[in-house]
Image (tube, rainbow, N blue to C red):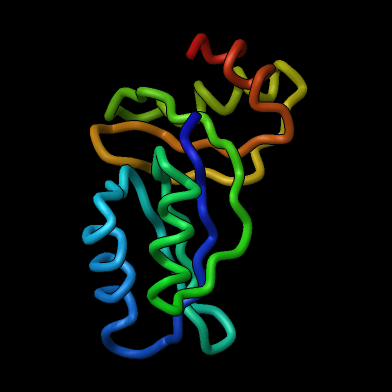
Length: 124
């Protein structure tokens, strides 16, 4: 199952490059990502297949890795209403979406309160 890693970066030039280079040197592909500044830091969420390998590579480079969680990666149509449709199916199963962002190849990353129920609800 795909892993979402929460990474904390210093909010200064070059830290995103260092993160990308550390993962690249370790042969870890970033399949999806989002990032934003908060409180003088940069917070990134990364989707990778090898969570343990990504953690090792980042920590070896001096980059702080926080939470690691299983996430669903769902194919999604690139059209209006697609997110709402999938979110409605997950909600209909009584599952809370705690995290979402887009990944490469038009896929949606979902961190939920119950990934098994969410997976069943969206037919993934």
